[in-house]
Length: 253
Ligand SMILES: NC(=O)c1ccc[n+]([C@@H]2O[C@H](COP(=O)([O-])OP(=O)(O)OC[C@H]3O[C@@H](n4cnc5c(N)ncnc54)[C@H](OP(=O)(O)O)[C@@H]3O)[C@@H](O)[C@H]2O)c1
Image (cartoon, rainbow, N blue to C red; front, side):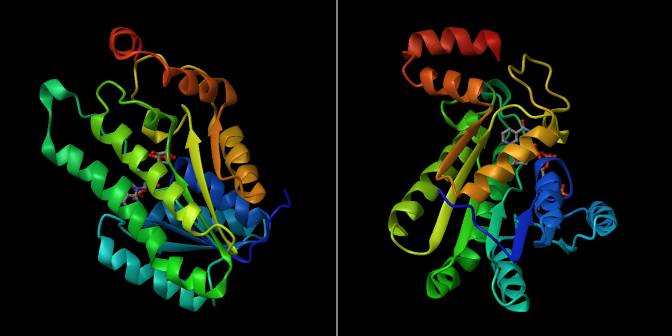
């Protein structure tokens, strides 16, 4: 598979964790990156750090849960740079939604950001990429999408939605110059996992995780789950019968 090259990219959720790392990773490779999130000060410090490497990162204050405004803003960026080559819908929230103390507001926030926000980000440029017959849309899903994980009804389901959404797009776009990639990280040390107290098998530091994501994007992988050990475990878990899955998952996670 030949590696791709980009002039311009948009990464959402770039104020911390994987998105921040990926924006810097792309910037260091000569890509002009629009780094989007709500926390402006974090984005400014990212842009400053990038300048030290001669990289060009432009902060974009954006709340992707405001879907229509997100579509409008992403289209403005696309126009401003004469066509985004790469769009990474990475912004995500990992609020727990335990069925025993279920809060609609938490579930809504997860869906507004992980589902509606991601679809708004990607849909904004899709018709233009199709017209240009060029471009790459990437969604950051999760290995937690494979089955309904305990206390994560909204999160697991939101990422399962993203997997299926991206797969359908990929099929529709087969044979065109527009590429689709679905990234499925396992556990990575970021703000999102900072307060998790249960076991996190094969936990990765953010830097190696970003390196794996960046390389998978450049290769134009259709789907990429990592680390490989967790990807295998999760793949096998699909075949575990419900009675066994329920008993084990509620104890381990
Ligand atoms: N860490 C893991 O173990 C892990 C595993 C699997 C998948 N993932 C996925 O990886 C992605 C990145 O997560 P992370 O681990 O890097 O967590 P993180 O450090 O908490 O980063 C989440 C990012 O999303 C942004 N965000 C949240 N709500 C937003 C909103 N309404 N509008 C715009 N941006 C918003 C945050 O920025 P602001 O707060 O500044 O807006 C932040 O930049 C997420 O989609 C997550 O589900 C993470």
